[in-house]
Image (cartoon, rainbow, N blue to C red):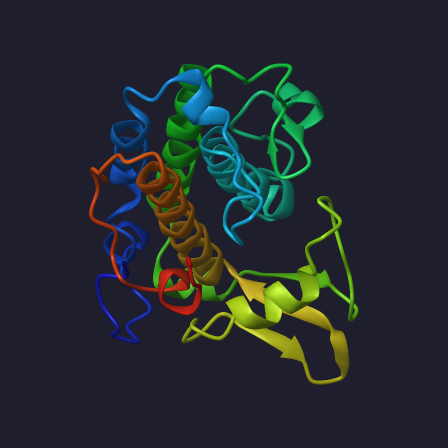
Length: 227
């Protein structure tokens, strides 16, 4: 959760997003004690059930890495990435960690902890002003899809930018081009983490297990539904 809505450009990044260090612990607590079958069970009859608990953790280990190293790497780090370049070459499979390298839940949790530590490192050297001054783009024509093929990425992007007060917009001269600043990116990663944690809790509820974490009612949690 952003700590302040003040427009002051000097607010440190870590004050804007103080919850980053606690996210891995929320995931670790939520999956503790689950069996391999419970970790891998999918519920395709549910809109939220196409990915298992393990898939949710894998995705949220990959999200900070992919945004910070892949999308923002050149701007933030130049040629000196702060993680092993091999991670970019063989670490990912689609929108998850590569299961050939990261399958055991302990390995996925460790990767997630490092990914959020990376985000915290970046936040430690940024301010609101510096984050708003940095920008990347993404071209998504109508109907654009990425693996898994059932997901309309353009539709998701249009929906997901709506709760963001700043930092994401469509190019006025090119309706297929989205712009994002770095502040948006950190808000997006955090809100994704909460939404996927909510999905893990729904899997647990279907198993008759109680949740262990209280998820902030903000961002994507407020615009998505879990029937």
